[in-house]
Image 1 (cartoon, rainbow over the protein chains, first blue to last red):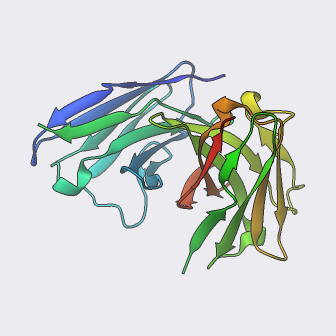
Image 2: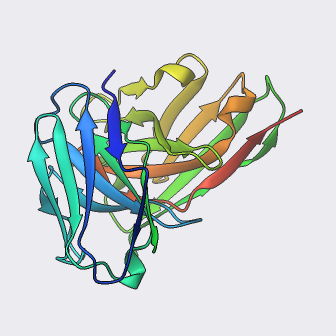
Length: 106
Length: 120
């Protein structure tokens, strides 16, 4: 099984900050990597697919990069609506999620 | 409106059974690979299983913790996805989401989820 490890687990930031979340795979997943945002009591929402493709309707302050085993999700200027938990997911070999990164208010 | 709506969650005893449903609307359900994902209380997301379209064989795949106990099926005439859960364990307690597989692989549409609690 492919294991996905996110860092950090929790991130404290302020509105306007640039935020970066890292996701590492235990083996190469090529570019088959997605990012999701989840707010408490809500379903996850797709942000990024194929490592760097922005889902329709998602603000351009979100971006993804990477390939192989190391990936990043960047929020260029954190907005109040962005405080949430973020998950990476590989879909190269079945599906595995990272453990999540909670972005909280500093 | 494009949406997925889960139902059927509730309380079950260890060793018991439960069937979840996921009603799809607003898109061509027949053409969509569908999946179930669960989230234990306070925990992260975990893939449960996937069913392909009938055109792709309608085959299913499952995560190791549920293999042999859970069964995914679909009724394209009713635009509905199912998850039959047997031999339930306390560790199956979770919110269960159905999701659509875009290009078959990442999940671009999610339902709101239904809570399954397994307890004696």
